[in-house]
Image (cartoon, rainbow, N blue to C red; front, side, top):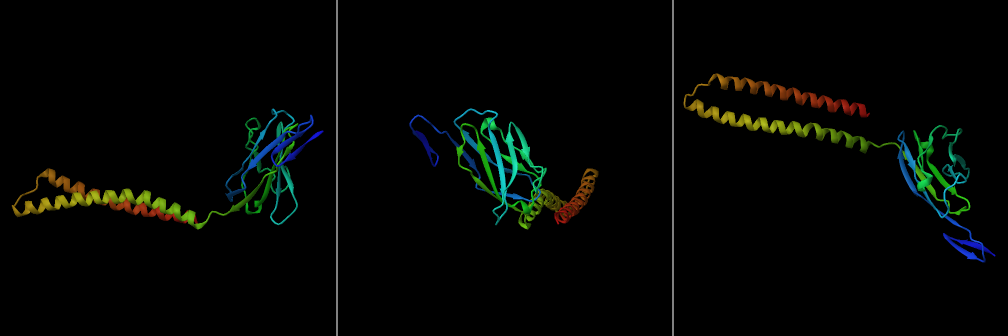
Length: 224
């Protein structure tokens, strides 16, 4: 008597039953240098979660058959204290919700490779072992250019609206002034004051445009 595991199915023969454990993980994960990366791993067990449950994450560099343990869990988290991932692996899961995820802090280009997530929850010990291919890259010029373009929109669109409104106002005042000049009309003290306010508004707008250009130049230099 016994049982046979075929794929994810359990075939029972006689009176003995072997329980299955299903584990899922992202096949491919992309991250950027210096930005925290989460490696997701979930599992589903037919048995209740106990302190016997264990989780093991391993890492294999590209073009290598050598693997190293980077994280172990059994009631407590035990991230690796040696190797390239020392002090950079943190627990990001919840076993009672079937989550066995971990995170990598300050990733580098050297972290590229294959990560495996293994879970055992006795008597559920028969399972697949999914792998995740991690690709870490530098943020490219295109992304930095997008940031500059976004800043340009946020700065210059409002400025353009203000300029248009001022031009419309100036056009109306100019048309009215021409009509008054033809009829020999003299400006009142209030109108003279309005002209002074207009000159101050134009000067303020010029300073605003110069300031916007300086902000954009500063952001562009910080990007590089």
